Image 1 (cartoon, rainbow, N blue to C red):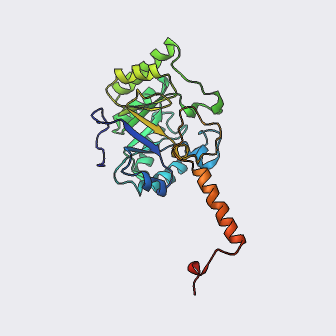
Image 2: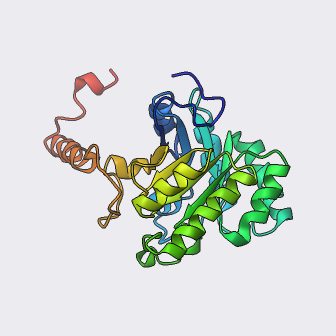
Image 3: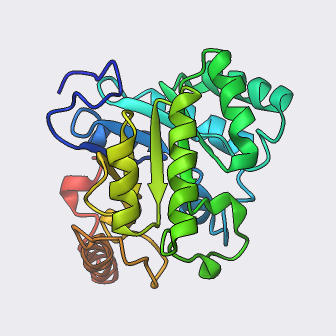
Length: 261
């Protein structure tokens, strides 16, 4: 796979995106999918947080830089963490820090009508932005309160307007999270930049999942409906650990093969 230079609707196939928080996972993903996202979902995935509001700039810098070292072909996307883009000054200052330290191709920010001015300011400063609309996790302390959007005409219209305004202001793509299929379809058909969905149906121009959910590494037993497990890493790893434990107890490990003489 050649590195994608421009995020547009000229893709012959839908855009694929997965998260990575470590060099080893980034190495596995690079060149096999279109976008690699260092998401603030690392708060719950790696640090055991109940939400993403505790994710810091240092966390994003450290994981973003570590992942960046292993990505040569896929596009790199990095989340701006909670409260780091509340005003124009902080938004651009923190965006520059992440861009300089992690070298992502795009930054992603969660957008509401009140945050559109931030999107415009960053785009005016030549920052490539993905606009994240629909359910915006940084707005929630309790993820159990998250509900699917777009069920009412008002919600559907508001989301469409937000997506259209995001395009007008220069976003490179719009991420749609947890909305009805007909709302995602409506948005995708009425903007010219790509839509990337998570819990937003097959009608989007692309899809994103958290890698840990993909392989069932997540500690969360109550996974959202949109999560599909492609591989049960928890079960395989558990079997391996039990085998290791058994060999240690029986003094089968380390054998001579794994011993310095």
